[in-house]
Image (cartoon, rainbow, N blue to C red; front, side, top):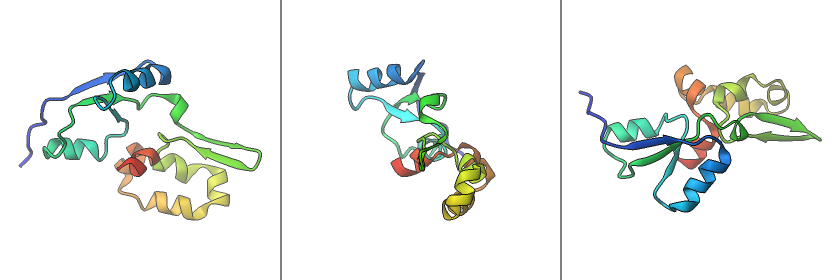
Amino acid sequence: MRAYLPSYQMVTSQNLLDALELFGSEPGVWRPFAGGTDLMVLLEAGKLAHRNYLNIWHLKELRGIEVANAQVTIGALTTYTEIQSHPVLRAEFPMLCQAASETGGLAIQNRGTLGGNIAN
């Protein structure tokens, strides 16, 4: 039987600077929310006391894979699907791509983020 979600507040910042300002202006009050694959399960189960979330899913500054000067940078909001399909990662880091393909089902791979996995 599904439980009802507890009351919580979700706001969305316009950009990364706005997000950082909100986190800095009220330390400990807000928590980042992106893919939500773990947080929604915990919220529904009533296992999260925290109730104020900042939606950062749309922040392009935290998303994507960049390759430059023999260096690869993977943004925190990069999904497992994006990791699996990137040609450089497939060629140079096949074990990372394999791990991404074994993380959850397709819905989790399409929504779950590398940063969310590290944070949780």
